[in-house]
Image (tube, rainbow, N blue to C red; front, top):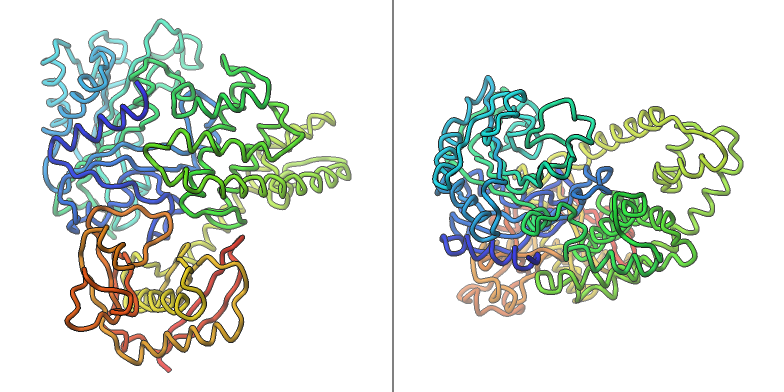
Length: 631
């Protein structure tokens, strides 16, 4: 079964059950400074899980592009990837466990044709805050009984050996879901809840458990031996962390389902290697041809091919959503992916012409031609950017190698300096050290790396203090000023300017936009003057909900790379009285943007706008910082 068939079946299955299909959000979260990338299907829907009404109703379904950098060191086995698609369905205060669990079981066994005897489930065992999920246990027993399977409950690891053990209880480390993990790790305001996962059994005959380090323990669905693969997770999102550390039930009980497309395809084809599916095979074929090596069993060659394929796919999908290589934020993660790709390309003998990296972009466009056509639209530009980044790192690599020749003893601190200064991944330093008979202290490297991460987190906390998510008065004012600034850049500098990113705190706004050169002082002054003119005019700010196609027709601005639902909210600044918003033209308003808010009611409350700084934010991207004051 192809990935397109699985994706289509899932969307159609839930659409037939009253769900509205919504588009995937961008990999770069909108108005969420707490994270660099969209890492799950629920992330763009948090306001609606907390009670805000969604324009498309209470039943939603989609396939969400996701990226998890924490999995980067796991890539290389048969199942871990950094970029993946999360098939998801949601009930926003509508149906709950009694509908969700039978539905997902029926989808897996009916639509995908999985043998119910090869499906095992897990349920939350409870803790001091939330009791055991007995409702899910009873529902699962009934589901299994209806297909003629005896389903015993395994309360402990030792009970896993029972031939009828089918429902497994685990603690919050395994069966509680929030963006932050277990309840004690959740910050105030974070939603979360117990979950119930479904695992596919690839079978005892493979001998995976017997060959693993856990061979002396009973095998169970959450065993890491590789026999079982999690393919579906129904989260019952019904709690919110309070300031005093307690959990309070939300005003509505939600279902937040997530199932990795790559893993569902693996189960549907009874093939535990996700890299042999059509989601990776076009990439693997190109890598085989370029390297002259063959993808096969669990070898270092196969591992290198998996890492190269995963990282390039993730890099391409990031760039489609507007990320460019840099030394900060999302751009830093992108740069790390490309450089690790080049490292593992070296292991495959790909060292002569580093621009081969660019040739790996086309297979990604081929893979997603039907589901994400914007990949194909941007692939030529992305190919060039990948090649430029590869050549840039090639020069850095030579500089780093030259420095290494001067070092007598290569310790962990020096390894971290090479990582930070030249972008040398840990694996590359180890390889270089082995050539001279040296070993590098990994613990020392990790210590330096963790110090760096701690400093980065501190810097990020200051950078994002009072971020847009708090909806404070100062942040709200700067958000409205941000709309005025974008419109003024288009009117005073270049109408083709589009937003490429933003961050708004209580202290200042930041906008990134496409432009090939530094703005002149005269241009910056003209832009700021126009913003202040519109503030003095005390223009009305109005939110209108309308079909997405109409919003695009009237010229409303939209975030680069962002996907929007069929109905959107558009904020107008200065919409002329008596004009039907759905019939408006750019002459009828000063600014119109797709936006979720919040904003002030009239621009006259903003104060005085000042441009503090204008600088480069990457190739072809400029950045402006702006302030508001009362004078």
